[in-house]
Length: 298
Figure (cartoon, one colour):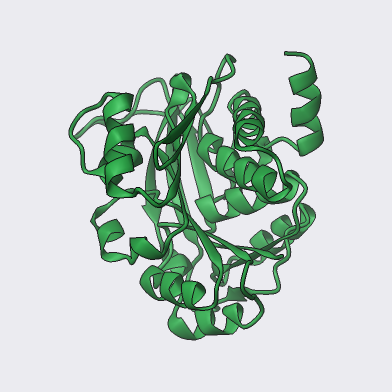
């Protein structure tokens, strides 16, 4: 079985801030750094660091060679990563303040993924393979449809959550991975109570597997009437930028290795808790060995 992560790649411009910039305000940052990010890249690296062979498909611009090199450093296969010489790679402007973040995205080459590229990539995968996607690339309706037709299992991290989500053929998705904001939107509920969001998701998607992460309240596995809760590991958070992506990658990798849902949730929670204690996105993601070693000390 192969794992295909078809997703975004962004240069992350990270500004450490005393507070988030307000309308009409000009303020100085405490520090600045540039790194490699994008939910697709982060999740591919999380899958690779958790011990899986993973192929990343996507699109970079004329400035994107560093991404190809970076992914390869972590063992991610880049056979299906296309380089576009006429467009810039996507980027994100990230403000980090008191362990919280806000992000502005520029799609760049991530928004040039087309049907021809999707068709070519999918010829290398077959029934039973896993496709992991997020909402940061173009042509998702076509990708979901064709992947389903080819018999791939589809895991969809519906981030960022926007109006486009409901235009996709969500009935073809097998696994949803969402945080509390995305879960609330996906379930179309107004309540902020986790219990209400869970009930809404159960009613809207009774035949799907759903992973719901809720920050300090931990995470939930939801499938029909089955609900499994995982407590969050308590740490001093420094930067939450790649926390959700780490959780997604380690959960899926654990399931594919044959772990139970409960064990997979625990491993993913521990991996995510390590990520938030370090600054940066992909570079802050731990290895499986580091996660398992840390779990021995709990």
